[in-house]
Length: 395
Image (cartoon, rainbow, N blue to C red):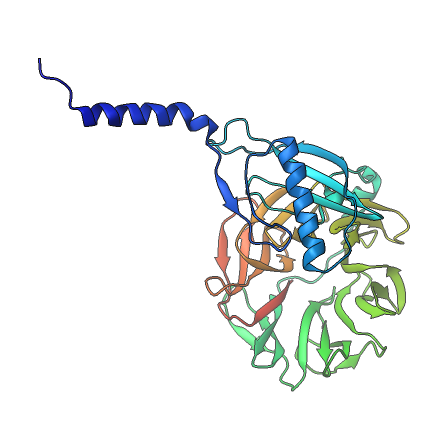
């Protein structure tokens, strides 16, 4: 009987040994971050997670030359999520630390990413907004805002941008402005007869203007110490815009401050509810408020990402918003959250008039331009291919 060659025996034994240990293998990863000295692995015990989080905070303090002190553990909790097949029994943690009056929150995900704004994300789901307010967001009976106008957008060529109107069906582009100023953030009026936008007169001098859809009859709306920017229309034809005054960015309507420390806002089709993005502890969340902004409800309290630029669907039942990682869609009460777009993108969004698609802007060499993604199927169509196209508003 012929014997089995020794090298085959050794090879088989090695494979068996490898397979027997596969469940215990831990894959180490480097994290290129000033708050993360050294290297760590994706599967963490509780003590490892706490030690790693403390090292991150210490590294952050050292890199910014802040004074050190005794770092206290507030809590460490495992987070649910997909566990890699090769990391048997791995757990992923959220660690909250305190240093004097400061809080540091680190969420360690399956990719071992750290989020310094994790504190606001650890709360249990916030109280849902009242059903009456959610229902009231829908358009008023008989309301018929203009539609079929296409997409108004800004296109940057050289140092400044001008405004254009895109016919989505044909792909034809019509130039609306041709000035030496930088014009941005266009928005159709509810009746489709005017366009609001921001004009830059140099430096930080930004003001809000309106014009007819052919670019004529330019009217200056704001003239404050500003800057005033990002106009959006209320259903009744009034204009809201963001203004930074006394160092605080807020939303104004008719020069009256409505929302404080807010980055963007939009009134519902009925005008009876407001959705907006605002800072909350260490991050940004999407909030729903009544028309007077007297009460508000957090719609993204459990999302492990900052949420920006929420936009109402035309029927007032859904909200789209952007994070640095994705574009999401959810119900007007915050339920049914799902990821719609995962490609690199800017934060600007707009719904199609029929509510079936969401327009967004790619921001890499491979996907520059404006895209439209079907909400139901996820199918995406590229509408423009110019790297200077931004801020679409679709009517």
